[in-house]
Image 1 (cartoon, rainbow, N blue to C red):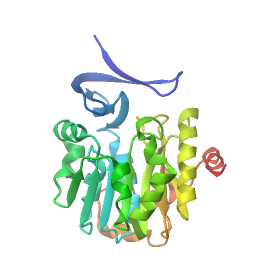
Image 2 (cartoon, one colour):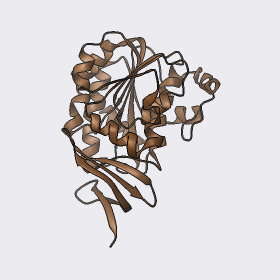
Image 3 (cartoon, one colour):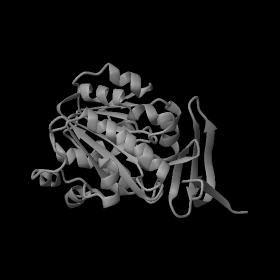
Length: 280
C-alpha cells in the first residue's frame, strides 16, 4: 500500500508527496507535529498538516532569510529570531563569526526537540554557544525589547490562523522599537499566487510599509510551498536592501547553495502582477 502526504493549497489544488515512512507524530500543547521520510524530498516537517520544511529545498528559504539581510548590513552582531524552532535560520546565522548574540523565541519546545532528533542537518546550529532559547510567545517577548537588536528574523507560520498576530501593525511597531537605528527586520510573507494567500500577504505587507520608512518585498523559489513562489518582507529604519556594498558579503566566504549577491539584487525585481498587488 502506498502512503502519500497531501496538503490542500486551495479548495481546488492539492499538493502530494509519496512517503516512505512516518517517523513521528504527536500533538503538542500548541499543534500537531509530524515528520515524514520521502523518496524525493528526504525528511520533512509538518505542523497542523501544513508543510514547514523539507530536507531537499529548505536551504532556499533559510538562506534568503539570513544572508540577504547580512549582506545589506555586514556589521550585524545581535539577532532576534522569532519562530524558527527547526533551527534552519540559526544554522545559517551561526556561519557568521561576527555575530555575538542570537536570541531564539519559540513557543513550542516540542518542535525544537523533534527537529533535534529527526532533522539534525537543519537543527545542527541549535547547540551554538551564542544562542539563547526562550520558550515563550514572541508577541509578548518583543514588547519588552528596546533598541537591542541589529536584526530581527520572523520565521513564522502563514499570515492567517495561529501566526496572524505576527503580521499586525502592533507587532511591527514593537519590532521597530526593538531594533537599533541601523537594524533590519526580515519576515516571510507567503505566496502571491493563490487568492487566499495573496490577500493575507497584501494585508501584512501594507502594515509593514506603514511602520518602517524603508520597506520592500523580495522573492525566492521554494518548490514545496504553495505555488513555489514565495515572498519575504524587508524593513529598516535606514538601511536600503540593495546598495553598492553588497559585494562585501563575499568576504565572509559563506558556503551558500542558493544565495549570492547577484540573486540578492534580482530578488527585488518582482513580477508585474505582484508589484501591482503590493502597490494597491
